[in-house]
Image (cartoon, rainbow, N blue to C red; front, side, top):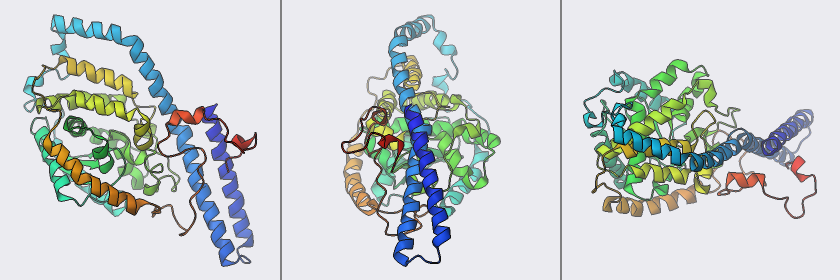
Length: 417
């Protein structure tokens, strides 16, 4: 019923858009400039509201409940899972698991010909910048150098055979993504969300794993959507928390995808759940091999299933394993790794990065306030739409339990205005 409510709202917004456009066409010759502007603003805001309803019904609400149910499954199934792990440890069977040769990291081959992806990745970066799909870089040199130093440490203890290029992007999204050939991008929001260096290291290791396993190349073979959206769709398929296909900062409307009529669905790409599970397993191995506490990845993951994670990073489409299912698989792999008493959790360099980040974030938030989307906003100076059904930082599942607001008519849910 909850999803159906927002599907109904989307249809109603669509009907209102059609009616407004018909009136605009009919009366275009007699409208004053103020009347025309009001009509343009109304259509623009209805487009935004329809996009919100579409992504809530199609992605956010189903994902939120998938994760809640998955957590219950984990609680029920963990005793048996834990017993099976202990049996594998006792028998030594864990050595024969896929990629169980962790003492040979750097000398083994996960996927051949990684070097063939370098040009493809460089071209993808150039294309995204040309299309305006790449957020600008964070200009603080110290932050960029710190993140690159963490990445370099992990890369040197991984199976990556190509040079690593890491860039921190100026975006609130709690997100990181990999392009082919060693091109990794960390968004500012992820640095804000991380509480220690091991969490950041876990994310970077995960993204490096996408490149060592050449997931982007495999996706490219299966992609059938229009080329103008391809690079963005590819990113959405291999990110940690969803990126441009998420409902991040105002549902990623700043990137213009919903205004262009495209809500990305990974089913179009034939994406396998195995890709994320593979990157999870390899990622904790690389973080561990680099001397980090591999549980940092799980701790960060858990935050992605919280209120904060839903708002800025909810994009685990239903073709992906739920958070808690992935957390169990990751914990299993960590259990099989030799414990390191001196594993790195926190560093002074991380603390210094956080201090550098605070003014960068404050300045960016001040500049972003009220800033329109270049692709979505065709009429400047419009008051923003009144998104009565969703507030930033509100847990998605609350949308299905929130009572009608005081002063609304009984049938207000059927009229999303």
